Structure formats: C-alpha cells, structure tokens
Image (cartoon, rainbow, N blue to C red; front, side, top):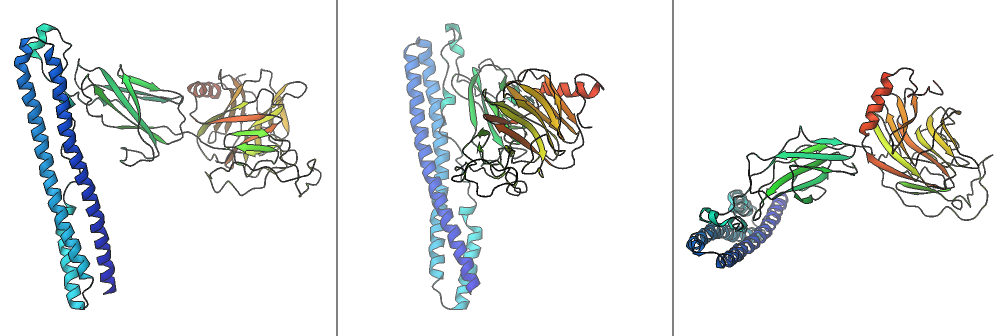
Length: 496
C-alpha cells in the first residue's frame, strides 16, 4: 500500500504540474486571441490611412482587402477559440481527476484503495490533458496582410497583399570558417524582387547537429543585411560549434527562418593556472603581471633560492575554474627564480595556436610550452622538458630560442605580439610575429607527454589571446616549411 501511495503521490504531483502548465497555456491563448484582435485593428487602421490618400480605384479595392483581413481574423479567432475550449475541458477533467485522486488517499480499506488507484491510473492514461497540444495553432501576427503603396499609379489595379518571403537556403559548401571569422552564404529558392533585406541569427554551442530548443546561449541577431552573404569576424572560438539561420524580409513581413546550419568552430581555450604560478606573479585569467611584493613573507625558505624579504603571504588572487582536473592542483607552485605560470589546459593532440602580448616596459619574459613535470625551480628553456623563446630587455635587448639550457640567438626585431603554433602529433613548435605572420623560430621534436602552455615574466606583464584558430597564413607557412628541407625558413633545432 505504501508503494501505491507513493505512486499516487507522483501522479498527483504530475497532474498538478500539468494543470499549472495548461492554465499558463490558456493565459497564452487568451493573450494571443487579444493580440489577433488588436493587431487586426491596427492593420485595418493603417490600411484606412493609406487608402485615404489614393484615388477612387483604391476605394473599390478597400472593401475586398478589409474582408480578407477580417476573414483571417475570423479564421484565427475560431482556431484559438476551439483550442481554448479544448484546453478548458481538459483542465476541468484534470481538476476533477485530481480531486478524486486526493480523496482516494483517505481510503483506509486496502482493496478499495487499490481499486481506486487502478482506476485513477487508467483515467490518467486516457486523460485528454496529456494529449492536447500546448502550442497555439495560429499566431496573432497579421502583418502578412499589409500592402506596399509605393508602386507606380498604373500598378495600383494589380495591388495585393505582400507575399511572405520564402525561407532562404544556407549553402554549407560555400560557407567558410577561417581566421576566427565565419562567412555565411545563402540563396533564395526562387527570385523575389520584393525582398528588402535579410536577418542573420547565430549562437555558440557545444552540440553537433541541429540546434536544441533550450541551449546554453541565446541567438544573436544581425539585421538589415542587403546581400546574400555575411562575414562575422573577430570571434573568439570558445565553443565547439556555431548555429546559423537566416530569413528574408520585405517592407511588411519577415519570412520563415532557413533550415539551421551548424559549423565547427573548435579552438584551444585556456586560462592561466593560478595554482602553479610563482608567488611574485599576479594572475588573472588571461593576464599575468610581475608583483614584487607577492613573494614576501614565505615561511618555507628555499635552499639556495631564497626569496628576499619577509612579511605577509601573497595577496589574494582570482581563482580560475578548472578546465582539466588532471592537470590543475597536482603540482608544486613555481618558486625561487622561476617566475613562471602554466596554462590550465593540456595539449595532447592536434594543431593549436595562441598569442601573447607583452607590456612595453617588460624587462624579461619567455613564451613556450612544457611538460607537466617541469620542476618548481626550473626555468622555461633550461630543461629538456620545456621549449620557449626568450626576450630580455634589461640593459640591451636579446632575443633567443631556448631548450635544454641551450640558446639560439634570433637576429630579428622582437614583435609586439608573438603567435605560438603547436603541432603535437607532428612534433613541431613554431613562433611567429602575430601581426605579419613572419616565422621567428621552429622546434622539431617528438612530444612524449601532454604539453602545457608556459609563461615567464619579470618586471612587466603578459596578456594572452586564446580561442584562436590556426591562421591561414600560418598553415601555408607550415606547408612551405615542411616541404623545404634545409631551408632558411626553418632554423635548425638547437637540441636535435
């Protein structure tokens, strides 16, 4: 009996929720019905205003057009009234069943209770409340009955309601995803000279295939597109996919949306791992800055590498949500003279790209990658588990590629932004001038462990840009470099 009571309680809860849902839908229908009437009146008023300024031939057409609007109103009103009546009946029956179910809970006799419970279960199975559609059969939109009076006078006799534009068709083959930009191309299924503009909507998602009704992000809109293509540029690809849809609009009404298209927009997104950073570094998501006061007060003195000064622990820092639990929180914080912080996301396969910009007054910094087991005293490029390029602006500027405590001087100007390209599977790490895409240096090796982006900074700050695709220019340079054995484009690896 207890099990049946629990089941009945669940049924009651389901019925109560359904009743609330139906009541909300009835309110929606009532609101829609009022909207049909109000919008119909608005359309007729606008039609009256237009007809007042036209010749007698328009007066002859006015009655016909008004009748069409009223017929549409009557049709929609009848549909909504019928649906409203069905929902009211369903709600009435459901409330009766709910009352009967509530009374049944007071039945003491097990046999009578079981009989009532079975009866309720059967009635719930057949209840109309679970079979009716909770979507209005028609909308209150009447704008498709508006007309365009801007035509020449000799065309007035052929005047009619503007047709609703057909849905455009997005061509996935012509669409292009490159350089953190997406170009969407579409066409109309048939020529329509009444179209005034197009509306494009897009949103980011981590789900492949058709868009979900309830997704994690809302649609973003770009209006008044005159052509049949549009390019979204400067995007951060921090989701695996993007959904796109488009619709055509004339001066009166917008048509249906095209079938949505989902395009892949995957790129490496990571933040700085505050749990790994040296106490003299202030880390905030994608920015790291030298903080000479942050390491004061360390009570655990490092043998041979003691930090100067004493005082309070390092200041409070912004915490970063974990992207890869297996990487974060499982290593010692850098210390001594290793003013280093790692990224919070490991690279285990594929090709990836990110950029780094240094402050103009930064005295020394390194940009590269390292294995997770890089020692807490180790500096980037001074071990066989890290690769980097190093910039030293102290006294005089030096620019070098470093690995395994060996350095290769780079005879070129230090760029404002450095692009890092990592081909894990191909065993290649390249650095570029992010603005000109000039190749700065290439390491070629075989990576045997997951890589973490690594950054060292002293007296200055570094800002990261992630969620970037491998630029097209870099892809072309990589093909050229890999195809030119011994070319000056690819410098000899300093270690192998």
